[in-house]
Length: 325
Image 1 (cartoon, rainbow, N blue to C red):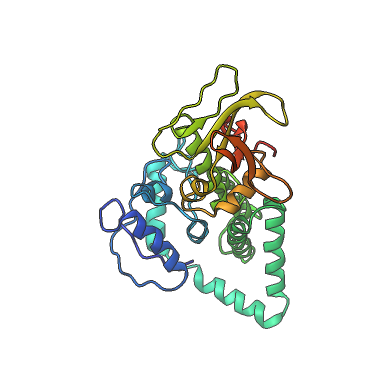
Image 2 (image 1 turned 90 degrees about the vertical axis):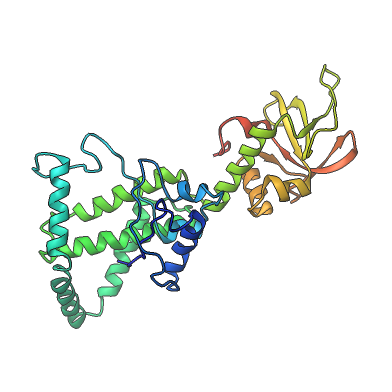
């Protein structure tokens, strides 16, 4: 367990941006108890992304994996799945609070004593724990999951292994497998809220491109006439490229194709992200058509002549950010 300085975001002591930076420094061992207060309870669905977004800040992959948001699915019994014989969720919450206050730290001593005894009798214990961790990761995330997801899964694996070990020692009173199942439940909830097992920053960058096209598909793209009743116009504020209503190269379906100029793609459409990495991922997902060879851009005919662009397919507005997957 890592002690985290308490941050009262909604109380106004810390901005969303400061809170995000604090999360990085805490786990880098560079922070002092600068902020005082309580971590404000957020309504259902409010996460670090919510309060950082209040200042226009984005949650980065490094912040995401250093302090993991585990959502609570508030149901008929509040955040609890089982109230273990209590008359109400409120009563069970009071019981938990009293037990935590009364007995905090009680399990540490016998737990550590058992660990020390094990280490004194065998040299295989660290290898056993690594094996448990690796097995947990293998069973709960895909082989092609990003390093960020595997890192978080590894932390849940350590929690599961520690819980199972404590149960084996007779400390928790839980049946075998309960600690592991609890860790799996939390991991699945985190993955569901995250929406992908891929790289967080890459996925957010792809979503940023989709959002840009959704918002500016008409106002910031110059229409290329096709001779079928379309028209070409100019003078729009902040043009980023062109659009053309034409048949898709793969499906043959007539729909809007978007051609983004290179500087606009890097400085506006992918602002805050690695444009090359985002374009590469868009191509993998079938949302961008490459040029010749390994080129991510291609040359197309426009009212300005033959220019190099990033060609976004009509699927960019399909609602599918993983069209080919």
